[in-house]
Image (cartoon, rainbow, N blue to C red; front, side, top):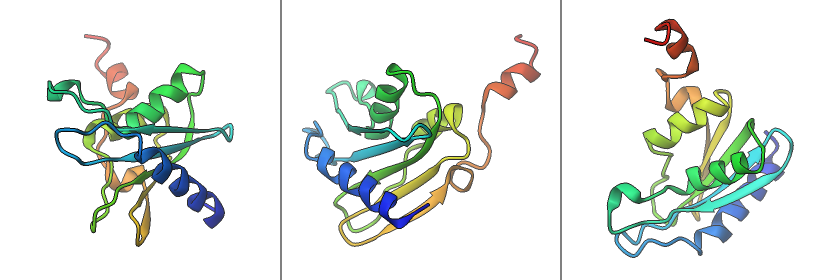
Length: 137
């Protein structure tokens, strides 16, 4: 993946992070998703007093893309302002796998970034093929 694309995604994720609604954890996250069609969708985390209703920035970006007809993703940048990098949670990884098992994940903070494949972060996924194996039972 070209460095210019990585930097653009990180920039957009950093910008949208400012819109995060995180009054409980104060852990604000921004995400920028590049689709295979070349469009970029952004998202920020949205917390809720009922923690189970909280939605991660990555899923906000992916659901926006899906709601506009996108189904294949190239990469996602996740931006946090912590000393350590933050990679997507298992639930976000599961959603990523559903749409694009080959996508790249870019984790960034103000000092650095790392690029990983979804396979590296999620080596034993559950997907549509697993449902087919069960015969629908």
